[in-house]
Structures are given as C-alpha cells and as structure tokens.
Length: 327
Ligand code: ATP
Ligand code: MG
Image (cartoon, rainbow, N blue to C red):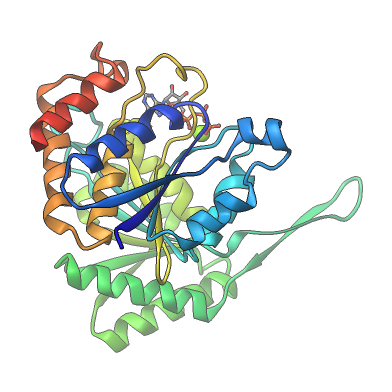
C-alpha cells in the first residue's frame, strides 16, 4: 500500500501554499497517495462544522498530514487535528537563510514545544462579572514524554544537548514539575540539559542566538518564543512545523491564513515547502527531505522571491523553481 498523506489546505493562503508543497512532494520520487480533506471557515459556513468528522478521521488514519491554515475557525480546526494525530510535541525550526533579510543571520534553532497541556488545555472559567480564571495543567508524564523526544532529537541530530525554558522560580508547582521532569529524563539518558528562565531566554536569544540550538518549552512559552525567533530570521512566511504523535504527524507552516494577501497568488510557499521536507524526513525519506530543503534554500538565495522577501514572483514561480531543481 502506498503511504497515505492527508492534504488539508483550509483557508486563505493555506489554499495556495499547500498545493505548492504537494507539487514539491510529487516531484521527489516516493510513491504517495494524497487524500484531500476539508476544514476551516468555508466548510464551517457550508456545513456548520469547521472540522467535519471525515476530515478528523482522515488525519487520524493517514500516515502523515499536510495542513495549510484556518482563519476565524483556527482553534476549532488545529487543536482537534493535533489531537487526531495524538501530537504531544510541536517541532518548530527557526533558521536564517542566505538571501532572506534577517535580524540575526546566525540563528539556527529548533523549538520543541509541549503540545497538549499548559495554559492551552482550555480550562477557563468566568466566575463573576469581574473575575475570570484559567487552570494550568502540567503532568509529569507529558513532560517526560516531551523530554524523551528531546533526547532522541538531540541524539539523531548530533546536537550537544538542549535547553529547557521555564519560569519555575515563580510558577514553582507547575513549571517546577515541568523542569524537574525534563531534567530528570535528560539525566537518566545522559543528555546534557541546561535550564534557562524563559524571560531571560527572550533577551538572550535576540542578542546571542548562536548560544542556543534545541529549546524545550511549555506550550504557551513555545508558541510565543518561536514566533519571536521567526522575527529574527525574516518573518512568518519562512517557518515550518511538525506536530508529532506516537504513530503519525501533521505538518503545517507556522503562519496563518493571511487574509490580506489571500487569493493574490503571491504567498511565500517556503514555510509549507520546508514543512513538506520535514514530512519526508519523518517518513524516513531523509535523502528526499534533504533535497527539498536544499532546493528551497537555493531558490531563497538566488530567486525567484515572493513580495514578502522583496521580490515580485508568484507562489507558482517559486514552486516551479524548486521543482525544477529537484528534477
Ligand atoms: P490568521 O488569523 O489566520 O493567523 P493572520 O492575519 O494572523 O491570519 P498570518 O498568516 O498569521 O496572518 O500572518 C501575518 C501576516 O504576515 C500576514 O497578514 C501576511 O501579510 C504575512 N504573511 C504570513 N505568511 C505569509 C506568507 N506565507 N507569505 C507572505 N506573507 C505572509
Ligand atoms: Mg496569525
């Protein structure tokens, strides 16, 4: 049976960059069966459900999923989709590339963000007209599972170790549990793990990004700090991500649906194409993943480039340039 890939473009520029990533995957060689799924604002208007159950099941059963973006309905789409693949970690590389104007060209980071709990676990309450609260969930088991993943990531990527960002000096119980669990696993596995307070990290990563390589974070901190790193490397159009679960994974650009440029055919497909490279590597096609990354890198450096990177090329022009380098 060919490997099945669910393709869920969603809304806005998701409908432009996801087909670009599929064209690139088709040019790489391995035999895939692509199955389309609907999600997002459009299907919510048509059917009342932003994530129809067929699409949830598709992601839950496919070997891997390529997702684009969802607009207004983002939370109703991406959170259940991450659950469908059982994702416990969001892998977010933030790398600067030659040819792309970046604040810190030496940046080469990977965030490993906890993807199931923290303050995103949804336990919010309105207690009165004046008072709302949020319950933060941290378990040793989820923190340890993330740390196990980090140790494997460090071993496979031949990194020296990883940092764990937290704020355990203030949130002693929750971030304390998170920190202790992560450091405990790293110690057991003999992997070097250095802790850093997340606020201090925000400053240090701007001043000296090359002090860091792999950074393990709680959910909200990982979301914010990886967007900060996106700013260091030239913007949202560049960053891919992987939501990894025990048996399957979902790949998506970090950017959203960008309604301001949607439909114009000028969205930068780099984040989606780098996400496709991560998908290939996840499925064991390391050589093909590397080739896609190299082809995208060359196009970033030599052009054509989309308007967000100072060029005047279309999404299709960039995609064709990447595909032609793969042939
Ligand atoms: P959403 O609500 O879906 O997150 P948004 O308005 O926040 O949409 P984002 O996609 O998060 O939009 O990105 C913010 C801005 O960055 C966009 O409005 C767009 O101008 C720019 N941008 C993001 N991604 C890209 C891309 N792939 N190519 C070009 N510009 C982009
Ligand atoms: Mg956004």
